[in-house]
Image (cartoon, rainbow, N blue to C red; front, top):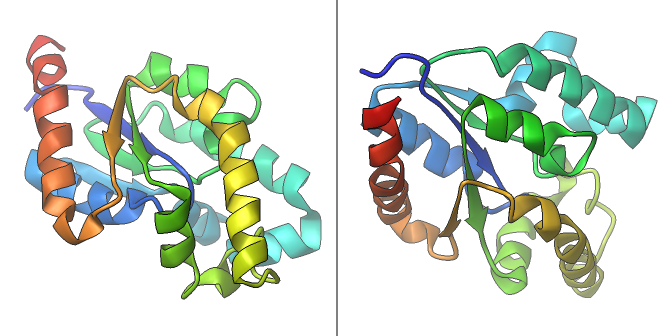
Amino acid sequence: MIDKQKIFLIGYMGSGKTTVGKQLAKKLNLQFIDMDLFIENRYRKRISDIFEEKGEATFRELERKILLEIKDFENVVISTGGGLPCFFDNMDIMNQSGTTVYLKASVEKLTERLKTGKQKRPLIKDKDSEEMKNFIAANLAMREEFYNKATFIVESNDLFSSENVTDKISLLIEPIRTTT
């Protein structure tokens, strides 16, 4: 195994970062970290509660603090929160610390996936289907500027074949793994 391998999976909520991240870590024999879960365990609060009690600005500061801690971890696949790359210089930090992979999904696919678990998602929990689709479209349009700075961009619309997404990522990062 290559020392210091670090892969950051970025993308909008619902793009498959956790699903693909777990599979990729297993395939590459790396550890897996879900940043949202890491934050919830560290602060002993759900992300939605942190948003509600402290506001988004405070959450983004906590998220950055955790990024600065885990950027030095080795041999790991890290699933980031959907907004993490879009605040401060977080995208630059991830690109300098490891390989970034943007899991890109369409507005329609994201809306479809997020309908079932929207109560856990502070930014969309109170929106009906049409409001949610419009919010995702507008929000994604703003975030893509940051997401597109990733080392690699991989289409993730079809997560039923998430192993195919994992295989694509493995093939893309193989040259990096062998030269690191």
